[in-house]
Length: 194
Picture 1 (cartoon, rainbow, N blue to C red):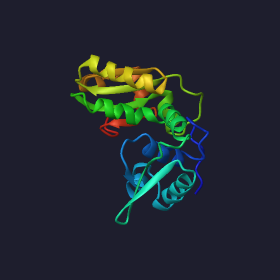
Picture 2 (cartoon, rainbow, N blue to C red):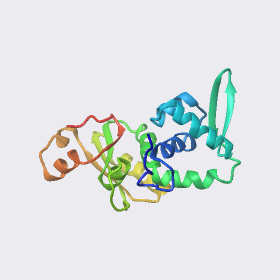
Picture 3 (cartoon, rainbow, N blue to C red):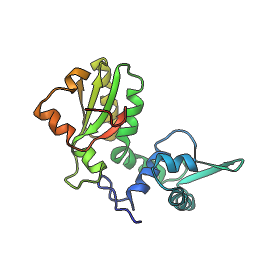
C-alpha cells in the first residue's frame, strides 16, 4: 500500500520514510533494523527497503553485531546535516519535547494539539506557524517554558505551552472542548486525557 507524502514535509516520498529518517537521524545512538521499523511504525519489509536505499545513498551506515544490523546516520555524508535540519523542523518537536520533559517532574500527560498536530495526523491545511503543547500535571511552570524555549531554537517555530492541573484539564470550557475534539500527538502519557 502506497502512502502519501507528509503534509509537514512533502519533500519526502512518504510519511513512513520521514518517520524512519527521523528515528535514525535525530537519534544519537545506533538502532537495530527491527527497532527502527517499530519506532517508525513501519512493516519490517518496508523498513528494510527504505534502509537499503539510504545505505546505498550513503545517508546511513551499518555495523553488524552478530546477525543484528545496527544503523546510524553517516555523519560524513554531506546530505546528513541538511536532512537533520529539515527533520528537526518538520518532525522533531515530539522527540525533542519528550526528551526535555523527561527531566521535569510532575508532568502526567503532554501532547501537541492545533495545526502542527493536525498536519502530523495527515489533515490538510496551511503550514503551521507555531507548535501548541498541552502539559497536564503539576510541573514547575518555568521549567516547562524553558524546555519549550530550547526546542523552539532547534525547530525554528514558536513552541507555546499551556499548563493545566489534572483538575483544570477536566473542566468544561470551549477551549478544552475544541482541544479534546481535535487531533493530538502524544509526547508523554500516550493518549490519556479526558
